[in-house]
Amino acid sequence: MKTENTVEGKMEKIVSLCKRRGFIFQGSEIYGGLAGTFDYGPYGVTLKNNIKRLWWKRFVEDREDMYGVDAAILMNPKVWEASGHVAGFADPLVEDLKTHKRYRADHLLEDAGVDTKGMKATEMDALIKEKKIKSPEGNPLGEVRQFNMMFKTQIGATEDPTAVSYLRPETAGGIFVNYKNVLDSLHPKLPFGIAQIGKAFRNEIAPRDFIFRLRELEQMEIEFFVNPKEWEKWFAHFQAQVHEWTRDIGLADSHVHELEIAPADLAHYSKRTIDFEFDYPFGKKELYGLAYRTDFDLSAHTKSSRVDLSYFDEETKERLTPHVIEPSFGVDRTLLAILSDAYTEDTLGGETRTFLKLAPAVAPVRVAVFPLLKNKPELVAKAREVYAMLKKAIPNVEFDDNGNIGKRYRRQDEIGTPFCVTVDFETIEQGTGVALRDRDTGAQKRVKIEDLVSLVS
Ligand code: GAP
Image 1: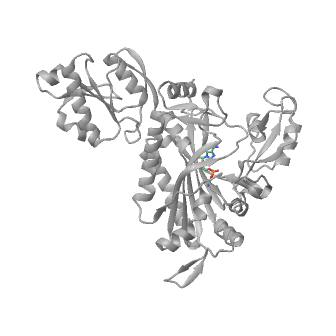
Image 2: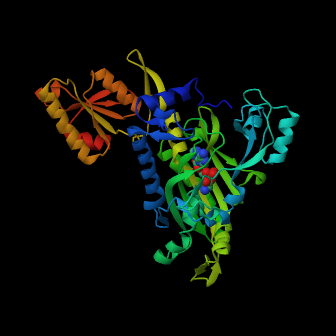
Image 3: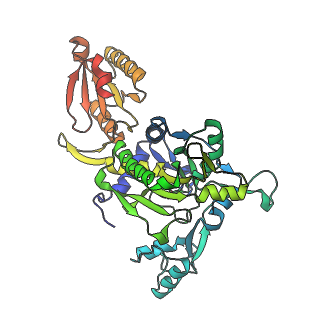
């Protein structure tokens, strides 16, 4: 689907910028890569950490009803049996009978203009046959079957089936198994939430679109435990919070859309889900999810573990199993949405330039400090002094004396640095402060050194 954000070649340009400027690299690149994995470079990891830090502040630190955890990725396999993932965390797979390459059946049907919402594997199979759909290489396709996306691994030295475990497919599992620990140690009252940021793993049949569909991904998730009578109120609360969050990180409101998931398409644990979609350069696709998971998980874990996960309300003297509202945010998809909205090309001083219009709160470098000339010790010394002063107050400050000033501006524009500070001869000889340049307009003004921290913070 073409969207407002679809600019010719924009995605390729973003991928190229990410590699050229040290944001994101193909995983295991020197060995030819590993599909569905990417490595974050120096600017990428800072951007990612800024996203996670802002999320943690908004959803955990700034609230009184949220508790953070950091659970193990490897879990007892019974967790995933109880949660329904062993039986049902699957995508429809179809194989090219000649090359044996595997594809998502729903993706091939969608590419052929078929809406697969709510469709079972058998229905997709029948449609592929009826419409004579072939693989992208033009070969016949086999039967559509369900493929479980969890990565299996072996725990310990024995290689028998009882030693099988899984890499977690969602961080939510680590939250549910710690619900009782948080309840027993911190005694929160309903409603309260548990939040976690961490890696999750999915053996996607067709990883694609750069960091959009990965096999190793990162999630920021909340399981918010409520009295079942209040689930609608809290669902609406987090629905609004998602929009506030996308504004925090600088995404355009007009690029974020809500999609009410049809009952037939709901995940096995959900009674209501809204997907938040974003206008990526390759189309409108899922950015986040908000699900009403009912008491599905706590009841399933109570039954499977035989540990009572009910809650006693001291005020009403009622014993109940809390229901859950789950806002789930992919870190990598957030980062890609930020890059998509920030990527800009314009003309400045008669020259075409590329820049990332990043919100200052997420930019990997907040301010860069330059001496006008690298070979003038007095300029370098003063610039170092200004740099040290700023670095004390702001963590993401960079000192740059490579190449000429024009080159430095271009490099800082491309990595999205909102402000550049130049120490020049006027600074030294006339004491008139420094030149402060604004990334978006390229405009420069003279400012006092002592005002810099407040101007760029
Ligand atoms: N606990 C609920 C859950 O995991 P989900 O819709 O499967 O729900 C939540 O995933 C979010 O995780 C998605 O909205 C997306 O941001 C991110 N995500 C899911 N699969 C992904 C993948 N293969 N690559 C990158 N991000 C992914």
